[in-house]
Length: 219
Image (cartoon, rainbow, N blue to C red):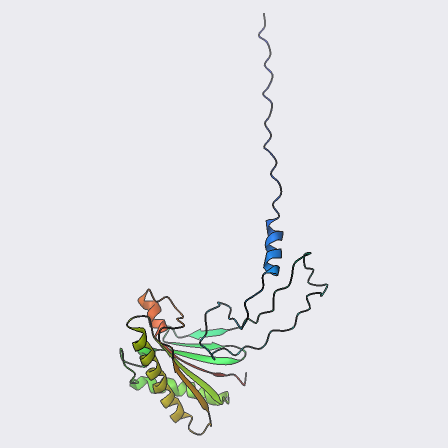
């Protein structure tokens, strides 16, 4: 007798997964969560008090038809993110940051002072004089000089040293700009407001710095 024919096994169909509207939900959540108040930079790095000069955010009509908000979503408060142009020397000893409202020069402590000292080196005067030239060209009437350290040593020592270094830079700036009628703000912040990782020497070197900031009045 011929062998009976086997029926092919039925194909198993994978169960259908329900659609996941994740992208839509995330969009709605993003629109519903309010932004934190106050000015912000693109990288959200904390700024020392008085260092930021940001224009007020524009008024946005939440009911404008072009927004096409999802039902139930709300528009978060507008935030202003400064457009920052940064130019840094090859070794990172000097960095210039330009925004539409201000100019900031950051000089690493090693190019200005000896270790754990607030006495300016011979080369420091030329570097500060170059900054004074830019202050003059911008016709600035307010200049902020802020000192910073890394997180090595005691916090109290860092506050004192950073203030002394800021005062030393201010002294040279004032000599260079003696007839400019400028108001100065000098502060030492110690290890506060780092701009790099304090767990590495390269990062600590960037954090040991003096910043000179003034308003931009010309392009």
